[in-house]
Image (tube, rainbow, N blue to C red; front, top):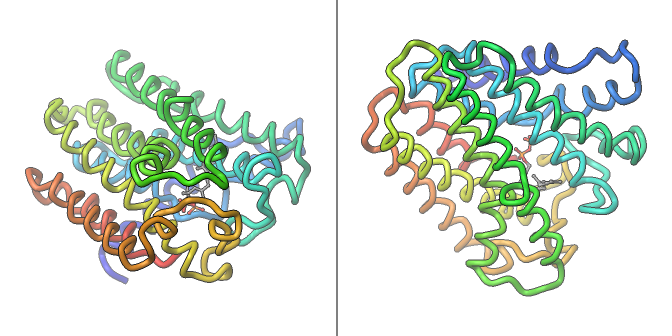
Amino acid sequence: MSDFQAWMSERQGRVETALANALPSARHVPLRLHDAMRYAVLGGGKRVRPLLAFAAGELAGADPARVAPAAVAVELIHAYSLVHDDMPAMDNDVLRRGKPTVHVEFDEATALLAGDALQSLAFEVLAQPGLADEAAVQVRMLKLLAAAAGSRGMAGGQAIDLEAVGKPLDLPELEFMHILKTGALIRASVNLGALCGNASGAEPLDEAALGRLDHYAKCVGLAFQVVDDVLDADASTATLGKTAGKDAASNKPTYVSLLGLARARELAGELRADAHAALAGFGAEAARLRQLADYIVLREF
Ligand code: GRG
């Protein structure tokens, strides 16, 4: 196992435990809702957003224990978005992370509520006392996540995506949609991790450094989506743990449908290079962020 793989699995284990502790027990009423929330979140997923938060925290000199609540918060928002996205009113999918989707395993009303409650829980976790030494930093973190999840972030991107089915989007329109739908939460993950540095007694990153980091996050967020489109067109359902080939089947505009597979792969490589360039002013403390940019572009599922 490489040093990076060992780091990833340590941090994935850490976030799994933190998520399990943050989620309500399935022995507490309402049992079915709590069971569905735990089913939606635990034991699956690559945990890319928490990993980005941990890596940005490392760059800022934050103790991983201080970053964990931020990592939990972004993963809870992500899990909620997947539960709602899979429902019949949206993407109508039956398979997620190799398991039946929440509305299939439970029912639609429970899936709706589980998503709602996961979103609320994310903010409860991020608002817990002691996450930042300065209250103003913690308020900035809360605002940042709220904006990333809302109508000018992920939910807005989803709305544009739903409106676009069957319509020809051009490349700038597709990019705008993905910057919101997938990119906003990835960007928030990096920025939240970086702001945790302020909570550890480390010298906080200045606004210029935060700006460079934000540019890295934008590149990685878009690269993540380009690769997602390539994998949807090119990998099997078994490898992905979700239904492959759905984009083409639902006549959705994607990077592959607009650019072709080869150019989409090239674009992912260019965004990876841009992400590395954005980190050029940092030293070894940005190593995990560099490795994550590589992982996101070279992943196979
Ligand atoms: C319902 C408000 C609302 C938003 C949904 C995130 C999203 C917006 C929809 C998911 C649909 C989708 C396939 C988006 C493309 C990129 C993406 C978010 C893929 C899934 O994320 P991964 O690969 O999943 O990080 P794991 O399972 O590894 O966590």
